[in-house]
Amino acid sequence: MDQISLTERDAIGIGMHDLRTVDCDPDFWYPVAWSHELKAGKTIGTRYAGQPVALVRPTEGEVFALEDRCAHRQVPLSKGTVKGQAVQCCYHGWAYGRSGRCIDVPYLGKGKLPNGVRTYPCREQGGLIFIFPGDPALADSIPMPTLAHVGDPDFRTRQFGPRVACHYTFMHENLMDMNHQFLHRRQMGQIRARFLSQDRGENFVEARYSFARTDTHQPLAEALIFGRHRDLKGREQPVEEVVTVRTEYPYQTLRIVDKDGDLMMDLWVAYVPQSADQRTTRAFGLLSVRRPKIPFLIDLIWPALAVFTNRIFEEDREVVELEQQAWDAQGGDRNREVFPVVNHLRALLARSGRPGQSAGAGRAVFS
Image 1: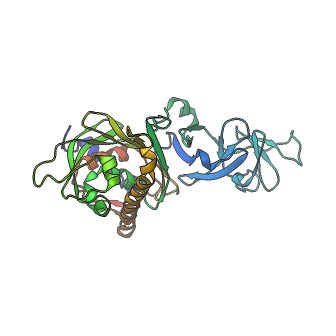
Image 2: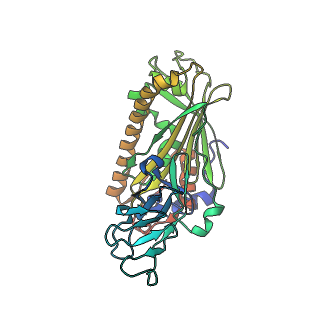
Image 3: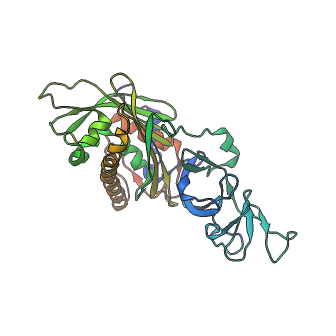
């Protein structure tokens, strides 16, 4: 499916609500912290769409997740003390087990315990701690995502988890639309994205690109990711690498394969809403890069690759936050999108999410 127009059903999916007021569907597994952030015998506070969550790691046993408040005086349980398989509130010592039940009030005795707090299904995988913030009865039937090539000895994987002051949908659009390479000209030189094809289904949109260089300068880190490209002085550059960007709701991936079909780079990312209005986001990303044949070369270039990818993301962060500020100033979504892939993506996000509390506030204006 190449440059095809929106179907009537997709157009309805976009127009029902301003996309920036569509909430994430909570009935998926969402990362809320890195494993290394939570030490044994400790608890930390995190958040999903305004819901405060306490993550607890006993000295023995698996991590568990509770609503981050004591049922007594509403003090955050993330300020508490881990004791065995429970966490004690820092204020009066009320204790909660992994089921969320209050299992001890020191001055009442075990026969007069109040109700507990909400618990979240919780799993740990690939260096990430996930919760299922929706209907807990669905958790076992919803698969965990495939997390790039974490643990694969043929790849080295980098973690990144910045916070961004924008609605999560801006982040999906930014990565899906490779036509914005002009933004990164200071980091990547002059390159042009060439759209190859697209595909889509009920829960995904996918676009494939190659890149052509239009000047002779190519940064080393970019060459390591996209391959060595040279300006052919007016001649069309052959397709040597294919970049595939896919939103498979609610996650997003970017994969690069070389001309032989071998995977060179694999990016997995989730955009997790932080605030109740979902207009602040934390990205949890895993970037796996194939190790070159020369031993230890990846270790030598890794610092430069980290700097390069950080600079690219900072440019992306600035522009999506500007988009959010424009939405705030205009009181609604006034995008004039012309790229069919992004329109299909917007339709996917609209029909897959849930209308937020402010869904009637913004006005949707679509071309």
